[in-house]
Amino acid sequence: MNKAVQLTDNELIQAFQQGNSRAFDTLLDRHQERIYNTILFMVKDSYLAEDLIQEIFIKIIDNLKKNKYNEEGKFLPWALRISHNFCVDHFRKVKRTPTIKTSDDQDIFDVIKHTDHPADYKMTRSQTHQNIQELVDLLPEDQREIIVLRHYANLSFKEIATMTNCSINTALGRMRYGLINLRKMMAEKGMSL
Image (cartoon, rainbow, N blue to C red; front, side):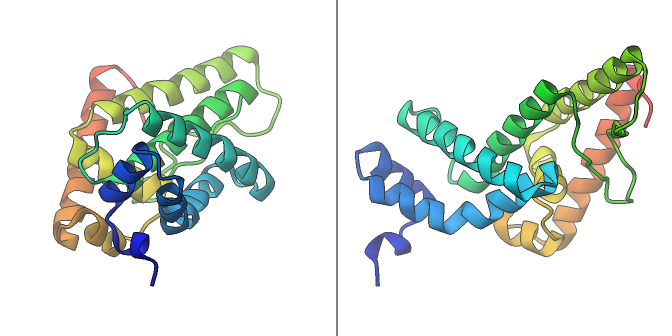
């Protein structure tokens, strides 16, 4: 059995930062499918997802080489956050936004449809999406992590509980409080769902 496969994500990252490129290959093998599925979930196009994942892995490698990783053993959520931000940037460039649903199946970003809307409508929708992303970034880390894993990685609460080393009830509670806090912040800013 390959010795690197038995190492933790943190150990693999340290090995990679010390010059062992095979350590990153092991990280890639371990998490590539989940990251790809997250990207595919956001962009809804397998060809585009394949293009983006290449660029995202380059960004992850650059960040690791620059020692910008300090997530205390939570490589996958960190990589998913990079993936999410990269996809959001991509959508901003092409004036599209991803579909992101809340746990009660509401479209939190009120997705821009592919119709001919006036320019001010598109700008307002784009700004709303950006505002919500900024609000998500302001949530406490444990709540933000659950929301990102649930909505962007499309993980089940059981998978999230396992990944974050907490019970399913704790994961559900964090999601609930995260959405409550998000709605409160939106109300304070005069935004509506």
